[in-house]
Length: 183
Image 1: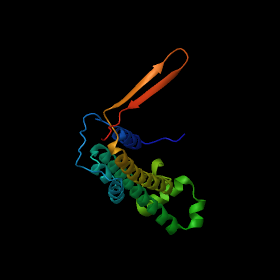
Image 2: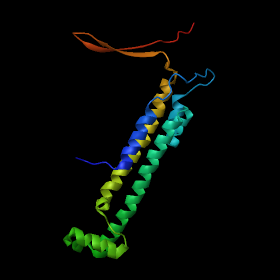
Image 3: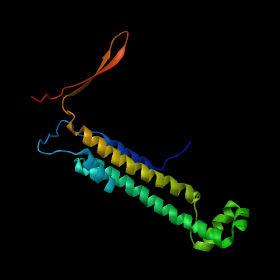
Image 4: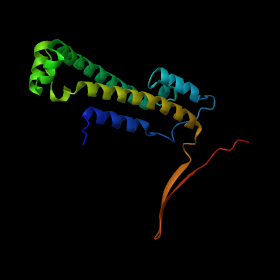
């Protein structure tokens, strides 16, 4: 089973709470403000989190910027460590490197570059790539979220009713909402 670091769990938790509508009934609809899904898409494409600011969702924006910053930082960190291992492997030679044990490889990296590998930093190329993929995923999710949120900006927020229905034979859920009819 794969274990996640505490910081990853915190980032995902922040994203979940940022995506949850916090104050649906208190938001006043500004009839003079037109929200363009296309504009939200391109703003978010230019900078992750900016599309959420355009949609006046600052908590979502902070969540996306924080996650993106964290994953960029970790990608750069593991890339630097990967360069230490790669430089050591080049200096020692691939044939000699492949014959070394794990402990000898760690000691060779330390002697060559001064960097001490830990258990968490041993598979650095895989970790670098994993964080790069997470970074790309958060980026595209930010764009998608801004685009969908812009499309749903006109959806009624205060007239939604969700209720559970239960009797002896069945269990169900009732969702109803009122739409404003323009005359």
